[in-house]
Amino acid sequence: MKQKNLITVVTDHQITADTIAKAIGANEKHDGYYLGNGYAVTWTNGQLVEATFSPQESFVLSTTMESRLAYAHNFKFAMRDYDELVGYKKSAEDTRQLETIKSLWKRSATVVNAMHPDITGDLDFLSLYYFIASPVETRRAWLPVLKKKAIVHAVNHGPQNRKEYEKWLEESIYNALVKAAEECAELKGAPTVEEIAEAEAAVDAECAGVPAPAAGERREGDSYIGLITDRCPLFNLPALMIQAACELGYDHEKTILTAYRLYAKKLISYPIVMQNTVPGGVWKAMLRNMEMLRYNSRWGRSVGEGKPSKCHNFRNGESVYNGFGIVTTGLHPTDLSRDEEKLYNLIVKRVIDAFAPDSSGKGCKPKGGKKKSRRYRNGNKAKTVKHA
Image 1 (cartoon, one colour):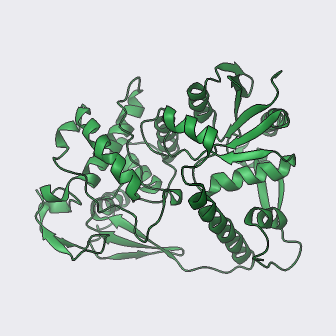
Image 2 (spheres, helix red, strand yellow; image 1 turned 135 degrees about the vertical axis):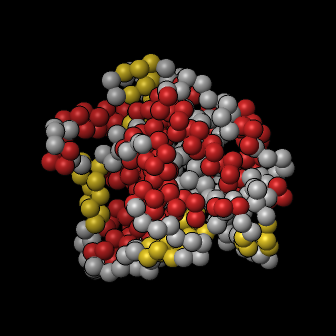
Image 3 (cartoon, helix red, strand yellow; image 1 turned 90 degrees about the horizontal axis):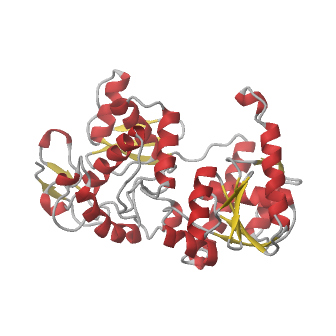
């Protein structure tokens, strides 16, 4: 590590680091990092530094305190200790990786946060920043898709819309602080509402050996309400894990690791998400991506004519920074293992179903081919369509 004035990119996993390093020309592989072309790329192997909520006084959100400083003020930071949890000595490995990150950090003019594209990734990076306690210029590489052009732009320029990102981040940090304070006080917030596809709920019910719910029914839990719908939404991670378990026989860990490899190979968007909708910008990208899916060997013939359905656009002007359902990227897959190919085709089938043009009668396909009334997310009047 003789270079000075490095741009160091910190991401969460070595698989992602490998993809980023190739895109920006950091081709020298070292122990715990990649180096080259003025860049260093390293990784944390997840949440390397833990943040423990520990306000030094009664918790008050001050509008005069910048959100990042509010986070630093109300949490304590320490290297994670998972030895007891995982059942083997992992602290030594974490210590080595943390020392590598510290060494690169101190030799860098800029450190780029390329952690997973959600609030957890931002908070993990902030925890690392305040733990190392060595101020340096930082910028955010927001990478829901790991294409080379997106990586190069994000590493060198930051988010596409910086003001929108900063507004989202500020709100998300304050929400995280409020949530931590509520949990500390043993308070519970209002449950979230999640739409569950009728066909997906039927598969879930079959696996559990219980009767399948019908469209319009609700499932209630401690922290969420599930609304059964006749839509065919995109996969989020929980739905993908359930479907992969039932159709492919994958356990949850295998599904997560395989999906992450597909993400690192640039074939799908970031998969560790709870959302199953997309913002308008992602919908526009699907105009081309759906055409590319015609070349899929298994499901390509089922791609309908016409523009992709708009029933999965975000409501209320939400942005890409809130996360979005798992979509394909328009790249053709090569060099996939059999496990990766099977999961990729499962995702392809769901993307095709979700974006099937409304005019074809294939969008939001209900079980049984019956007529269903559906109210579109853009607020248009409900209309009845006949599905094949």
